[in-house]
Length: 442
Image (cartoon, rainbow, N blue to C red):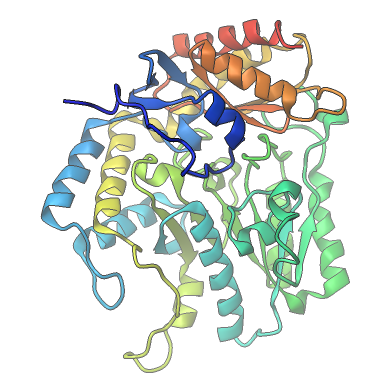
């Protein structure tokens, strides 16, 4: 009987792959056919150590039994239930579990299917909330340069990665951006939170002065900017944003699609930095990447503002066909149980020093101009090749795959975010492999 591991697709042309150099890939495909715990299996039978938790999402490792079993059982029992005007128990159970896990004050959950949809949901909630409390003039949204908030129009509008924005017209109107916190000249090779840059939060006051607070609905930032290359804020920066937004009646949204579910060694980035937003955006690790699902957590104040008027009237005209999907809900519950059983939401804190020391041992190798780390996430920034940006890091990506290691590159930055089940010896394996690769790059 043919299996996925011994049958290759006979034509690669139909699938237009996301965020991929399609022509390069299809000349020399890199195919995974199986995965277990910390490793992928390639179509030619090699084992590849997962240094990126898939795409920042497989926090508990691959093919975890409790999650696999929950999905199979749920598919046999209740595969789908309508999301509008009907419910099923597991969606409510998962929402309760998330509220228990979230920072105090985030008491209600809206379910989505991805980080991108979670961002769109959060932005719409923010705009609608300002309207229902009589602040309808607050329509402006503030993002941050180099921020990544998914690929839908709202997300790329408040996002600040040029290549994700430049081909898609004028995007949303009424959007402004804070400066990013990356300062290579002052903060290169910082261990953990860098020293310089807290004053950059004060740029929000300048933006408020420019537009007036009465026009601004919300500010959205990632606690740690992940997809752009792991940009870590200095101590006090997020608290300063929180203080300014409260002062001016502006909602603060944390995009925790990457920092959520244990990546920093705490349940959420909000816990790590000790700052509670009004809205928190999550996805990825919610279901261990197994089934698409996102969750947006909002404060009681925001939720209750909508619960007005006749009880038979829909309070918020928003949602998705698959919001709280039964199989995704079952996967989410099993994922949270796996995290709890194995202490994975705090394991990053236990390994953080080992991880930090291992990464920073690469300092001084050819082309390395910065190393950054926090929790179980890290970045190695490389000097770009003159006139050929991204080429050096992409060469490292290809070499790593050939040598049995999966890394992620963005620009000329190598990003690492392994599953939280990683061992100290596997951390050593990642760094040893990268060390050899960095010494051979042109």
